[in-house]
Amino acid sequence: MVPGVRLVILGKQGAGKGTQCVRLARHYVVPHISTGDMFRAAVRMGTEFGMRAREYMDAGELIPDEVVIGVVKERLEQDDTKVRGFILDGFPRTSNQAEQLAAILGPNDVDLAIDIEVPMDVVLKRLAGRRVCSTCGTNFSTATPPKYDWTCDVCGGEVVQREDDTVDAIKRRLVLYEEQTEPLITWYLERDKLVSIDGMGTPDDVTQRLVRAIDRRRDALRGR
Image 1 (tube, one colour):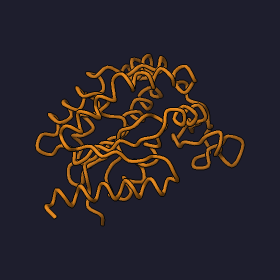
Image 2: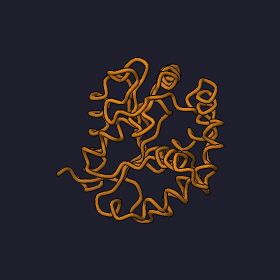
Image 3: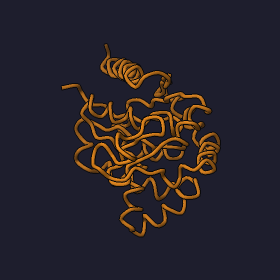
Image 4: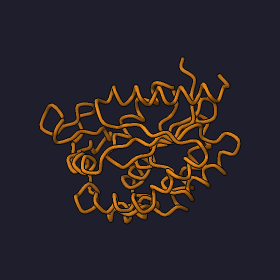
């Protein structure tokens, strides 16, 4: 069994983070914690928090820190994150969130933050073509659709375009990323916890680059 790790995966939406987080979670046998998935589940359930989150998501806005941090803290307190670690996808997105995360984790802070780099024009094209199963959340695209009439290959649910994947909402999210999230890269770089990985190429190629970077950091932490 491959030893676990505590990771933060950064990068613009559409950089392939979700796919790579799932692959890494399987490789290192740790939970994949996606804030986006948690928010969308709350929206589908119609909870009070879900209704608040939906207002921001539909407008392409970032959900306020106090809401996001509370949800993440609650998730990190669950037992499955304690022994082998976790992979955080979609959090932190600002240096303030990173500081709060470090305070939550204390001496068991993240091992590494990885920035998956993909050009902006590629990101916009990917997100505009993204489609998702409304039941299980499996991702497809206009370039790689389900086998049968936009019916999910995994569960048979309806595959649709997310409400926040309109061109206007995508552009707004990318602007917010430039303004608020990129300083986070500097925050981790200053603490010697950042590695940038080329996100172009096949999923297998990108996964191999990620695993090599993670294993190098794990070996360094062990004093090899």
